[in-house]
Length: 334
Image 1 (cartoon, rainbow, N blue to C red):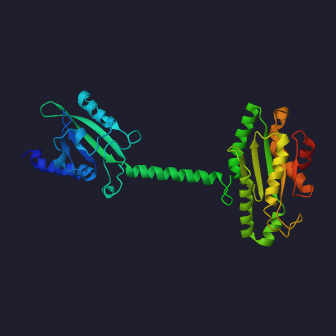
Image 2 (tube, rainbow, N blue to C red; image 1 turned 60 degrees about the horizontal axis):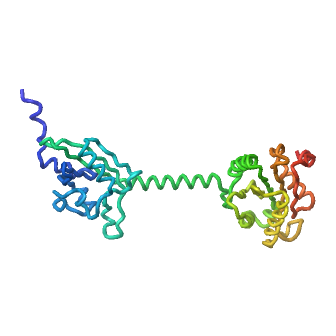
Image 3 (tube, rainbow, N blue to C red; image 1 turned 45 degrees about the vertical axis):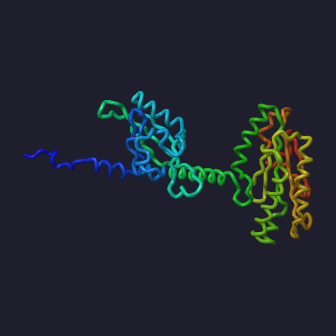
């Protein structure tokens, strides 16, 4: 009975060479003296150097420019100690001068590479090594796209889609952090509740498209009054905005509120259905936490909201400041 091995194909040198050249990765083999023994077609394509030109050369001299020192050190460690080495793309983006053929005529930008170096035993017992290079450019691009998409989703989750300022979710999260910081550092924290006067009437008369444009204009104008990265302005719902200013003392808060109110008034946006005047205006309620009334910090938002309610009761287009200790006003709104 004939041996089964006689039915297997004879993997001659010709077959082996075809296999080396068919794979979609770079293959380099070097001997114990770091001289190139194998340089497949993928390497020729991406280095623009044919095998005949590099065969027998020292690896450090084979390329148009010297490979990264980390790569040469890794090859020598494999040859000297017989240990495999992996050069990840995360730490070694482009150790070798390899390029996309489409870019060779333009400014040369190295492709991202992942490299593995494997020790091999030669026929004479001397150690050599096989170097495998894969193009990581596609995975890097995909990673960048995913990261960009993730950042975009993050922005969408924390930003009001109409006005472009922060939304209520973002404010709620950062308010908790600001409260904790104020308590630890014994610093004041002021909250402003802002409402556009008679905005329902504005929408009914001018239409929702004009109303959206006005909401955006108000948001941009309020935002333009802020100068610190810690200041947070958010759309709190409908025509209502909320502003948080860390380290804003009580004695300065009302003056700043009037600055906000005047900025909107000076836009001189027509509002013929307003019962305040013939132009758009806002009402503001504000309250400030400080270390003297730390125990009342939990009602800071309620107090600012009560101050806004009082500003509306008093005729709108004004700012009302309410201390946290004024529990009577808060109870009347609850």
